[in-house]
Image 1: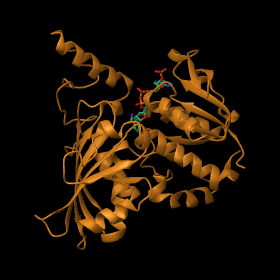
Image 2: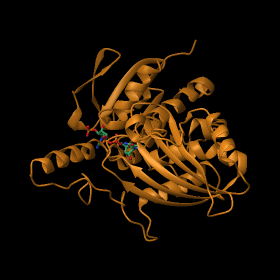
Image 3: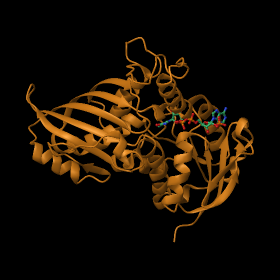
Length: 346
Ligand SMILES: NC(=O)c1ccc[n+]([C@@H]2O[C@H](COP(=O)([O-])OP(=O)(O)OC[C@H]3O[C@@H](n4cnc5c(N)ncnc54)[C@H](OP(=O)(O)O)[C@@H]3O)[C@@H](O)[C@H]2O)c1
């Protein structure tokens, strides 16, 4: 039987943190004591876990030497400050923010795709003890790309995303709700979380613009996909926020190195753990964000040859950004550590 561990959730009151708690409970993660951490604003609030109320503690005051593992999602600048403190106090950190993802000494892991990198990481005695969870849009895309890349080598990826507002946190979800409500009753639309009105709109701008014209979100998809799958991959991304509450969708165009039939593409995708192929060229024969919300799979639909290029393939990929795109992936990494590397806990 697996030994139970003490675990801390930093950012427990947020979208990702709450989903992590739900998934830990659903998957019966072996927990001895669990600690819920957030900002000092939330100190003393109660969060329910396994039928018990847990009092939220201030992340800034927490002693990480009391836990073996911590799952972080308090935002990049907060992780930057407290994840190293946690590791110094002997704890292993799985971080959901973008802060450490591209560091050479931090593995960027999607368990079904590249869990092997954890072996090298834990073999290294001077390791950072921080493991990064990739960006939500990256996770669902690399899940679908991996079996195709193994079959026919992908040379180039062109992706356009349709990203839900929950990817921008709980305040962004409230903004979509308030704007939608206010438009129906002819009230003013207030914009705080998004640069333009998000209700009934689509915004091709997620996070700040970089000098090369990409947004940070687009650059993350490019850099992270290469780090996880293959540094030789060419990736072009356009990331768009749409008025959907949960689940991201992606239209993906691939240039492969060799021919791949629609049937074989469907077969290798169907055989890959965590993927569900739902692809019938008929009404309702595909998955949309509403159906993916609350589920654990990465859904692939609309799989078809792109006849405009040699060896082209089109896909439509949908997944719950809070689950496989964040919380579930982090918990799967934690489960791998418990299963294969628990000797590394202090
Ligand atoms: N949502 C997604 O799809 C997704 C996917 C992958 C990664 N991520 C990343 O995960 C992080 C959190 O996202 P989210 O959607 O959960 O955001 P969120 O709903 O806004 O929640 C933010 C969490 O961070 C806590 N926090 C904020 N400032 C803090 C501080 N100074 N000290 C300690 N805790 C603090 C908040 O606590 P209070 O309630 O006390 O303010 C809350 O628990 C972000 O970096 C995001 O990029 C999100």
